[in-house]
Amino acid sequence: MNPAISKMLEESAGRYLTEAERRAILDYTDSLPKRMQVAAAIQQIEEPALRSALEQVRRKYPEFFQNRPDNGVHHTLRDFALVLRYSVLAMICDDRNLQADRILGWMASMLSGLNFTPQFNRDSYTYVRDAIKANLPPDQYALIEPFLAINIEILGGIPEPQPV
Image (cartoon, rainbow, N blue to C red; front, side, top):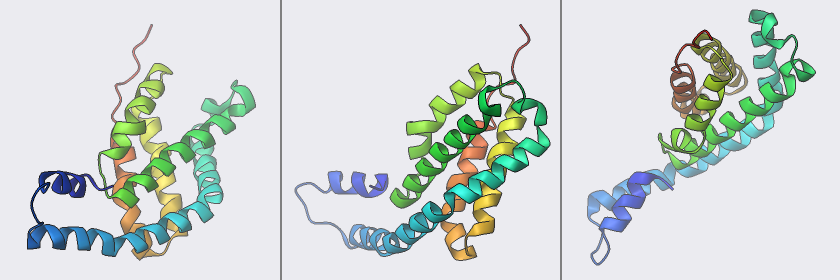
């Protein structure tokens, strides 16, 4: 659930909601059907969109995919899908902290530990964002875009690998 709504409901224990609180809840619930439509649309386009992003990464960073099991395809698609699915969940909840709290912190530390560069991550998740944008109508993309931007910001913000 949306954290602001949750907090508001907790704080209203023992009293009636104010008009402003009722309006905030109604505004959120009014947008929920559209958010669910976007989630369903992304579910339908996930595989081809992520494969498109993967191909762009492979073209820009061919050396990355050499000497990796299955050329890194399986793990890259898995990671893209995991991050995208948490982005969709965050969009449904309208919670801009959900991704960082549940997946992006862990993913950033994993990518950093594997010596992925910030630029590689920025490029990779920009390609994911662009592939989603290319497959959604503008009004649907507008709802998911802020959450896709968070992925780029956090995963592209890891420290540069240090030489050993």
